Amino acid sequence: MSAEFNFSSMAHGLSLRPVRSGDEACINRIYRSARPDLLLIDGEADLIETVQRQQFQVLQMGAGQQFPNAMHFMVERVGSAVGVVMVDFGHNEVRIIFLAMLPEARGKGYGKVVLQGLQQAARQVRCPLAAVVWHNNGQARKLYQSLGFVLEEPGAMADKLVWYPQAESIMVGVSG
Image 1 (tube, rainbow, N blue to C red):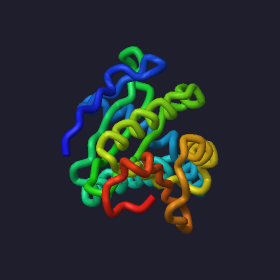
Image 2 (cartoon, one colour):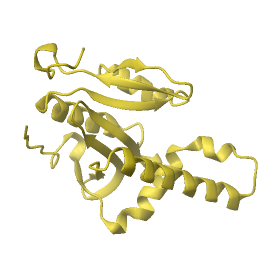
Image 3 (cartoon, rainbow, N blue to C red):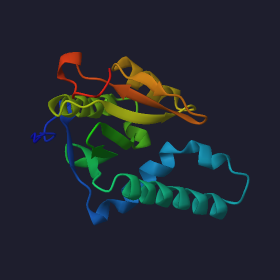
């Protein structure tokens, strides 16, 4: 099954481009800002920074092992980075591994635009779109649910939410 995805011109002047080696500092900043729970660690600033760095490495290594074909994109608005998304087009689902915006880009609808683009891509390949959302991230949960994502697998710390394309376009064997 092949499909072409054009993320070069989305609403709000947004576009996606593959991550480059020079994006690492921006991605680290986005990740750290997306994990305010790590700031609650009782310790010195150096300890907190070390834990943040280690957690980001765990995300990257885990994604690499679980989703070796995952694609990493910078979300840009008029050529400037505003966010990052990691997504895997698997056999049975499209999985959002990580999606976050810079703090100054949050609340402007950019995440919604990216999610809608991913929904369009999932519809084209006739697969559900899945994401794991932390319990303490009520804003993200509300956004996903507003776009039709439903709870598929509850977890102790996070839940798997899934969006299904229209029933007639879902792959055989995938329930909806």
